[in-house]
Image (cartoon, rainbow, N blue to C red):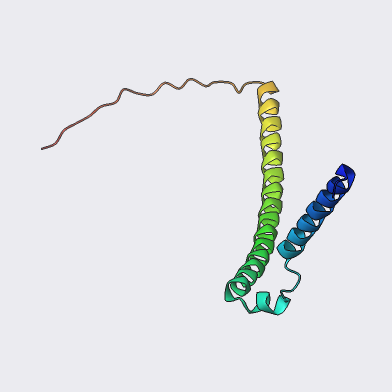
Length: 113
């Protein structure tokens, strides 16, 4: 091989075949899914994931319910506050009640022993 172009093409082809083989081996196309399903760690992980998904759905439902109850109670409390403020403003604008002065007799304390 005296041609430099032929050497470059053969080197490029060798690199291409090398990386193609590397990618093929790295992908492991010969492994089956039954081996992965038989692995107890993967089975336990799958069961745990399903359990956590169900639990997260229940927690989200509980949070939505509590938030709805909180909003109802907040609205009720805000309406009570508004009613109290209106009553306070109405009482402030009403005339003050008249004060009555009462004269009482002096207090006498007698001791008996």
